[in-house]
Length: 230
Length: 296
Image 1: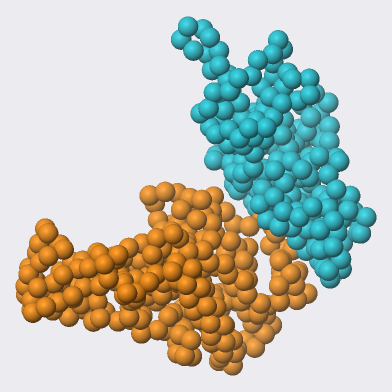
Image 2: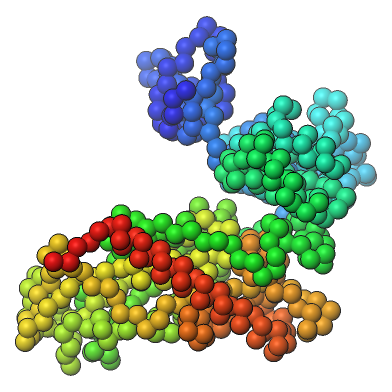
């Protein structure tokens, strides 16, 4: 589809239209509404024609609600913590936003620890907020502190690819050696394998398949993986 | 904003890998990354994938150096380079980068400043407004080298020095003809522009140093990446000429280094400087051949 730049007005009409990332509705003075692009990329549309979004790549993360992110604790703040998620502002993580947490039983997170959390509030005028559980069920769902392992940085498109269950990379690596991975939408991926060499190989493969880095496809990554020392 | 310190898992993993003899990108300890250089369309504006550079102008010489031209070096880290850089405010890294570049290019005398003199004179008078035709005012060239770091993947200093050296080697200035006390500047299409007179081409080779069991066991990683530079116990930056002369030695961080280890690093850096010099010379020649500047 067509390449669009921020500020362009696009024609997106449907009875039941849904605007995805990169698009915003603007109401004019006479009450007419138009759709304006807020990110650079290609304008995409789903098969039915009611969902529109802008597909682009960048390295700077803009928080959006319900997105999983990998954060680094940067400071204590009252009952919770300040977390660096790579966005323009640091996020707050409340001490009680964990499974089974109460006033007396709070997780013991130190500065510079890694956490896997979900963005619960992301408003452009406020600091983002994180939570480490599902607010409805109050279950951890895989969120919480990440111990050991290593943090790999990648572009945002790559982290979206890694979260896609049909993408080839993580199953390919998993078939060679057992691997634990937590993918954040903020361009950070935590990987943990038993041996140092395996973790380094996984990190180099992520960089190789990244559209910003090596830009390799499945066959090329397979060949590359075979050349690595495992 | 200070760069955030690396997270605990990154730090632990990095040192575990280092003790096992591995680097994060699979390189050997003494293996550098291959540089790439792109020259701009105008005469004398190269840009390696991380840098860009600037131009020159005419001005009056300094009162205490009436026979020398002026070189000023200006370095800037763009907010594109790293998430923590703020525009307008100079971070510590930017200041130390600017200082090193100033030492390497300006204070270590890479350019022959006397060759930049157009018209020598004892008294400095303000330059005339009509610069193309002027009479009897002392004039020298002022070369301004501007380096903009667009993306920092660790070791911006080496990349900046490489870009600066490429710029100085590639650049051609307009030819100035002096008859008596009258100076005439020839436009680039009238007379072929002239290269700068360099005493030598500086190259910088940096190491990140990590403590070991004793002074002899210090590990030196050539061309550190971002995480390696952040976690280093000490750094060693060597600016040298291809003729195996040291221009600037900058050792920071406080990690003691045995003399034998230091000399090993210096010898490896000298070899690397010669490789870079050959590579840079070939690239500059290729680009000039492609620009097909004719001399009639």
